[in-house]
Image 1 (cartoon, rainbow, N blue to C red):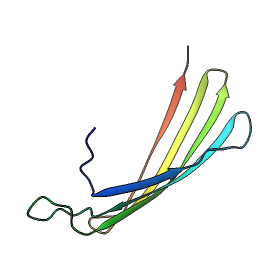
Image 2 (tube, helix red, strand yellow):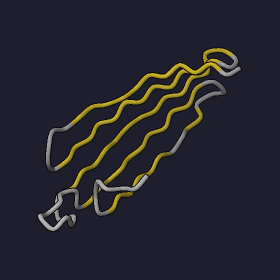
Image 3 (cartoon, helix red, strand yellow):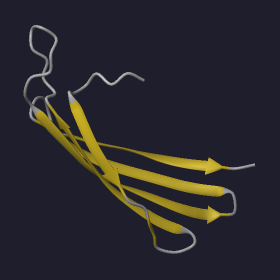
Image 4 (cartoon, rainbow, N blue to C red):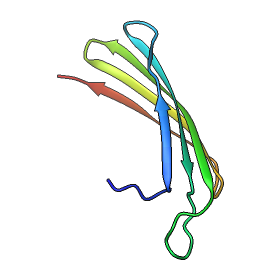
Length: 90
């Protein structure tokens, strides 16, 4: 997909395996120049996000994934987002 939300962005995430069934993955992302001027060029404004993803193998072939993120843009409201996913493999 074409990226059209900022002039540039950088992000990093690292998964840490706690046990055979449990891992956590903290992550960060930064966006620069998120505001569009009248010419359609990005000019000013920044945003950053921190988050944590937890993976847990409940039993063989049944996994739980939960994520929570906090986003702080210069424009607009701060936001807390996330999801919970159960996945069964056949």
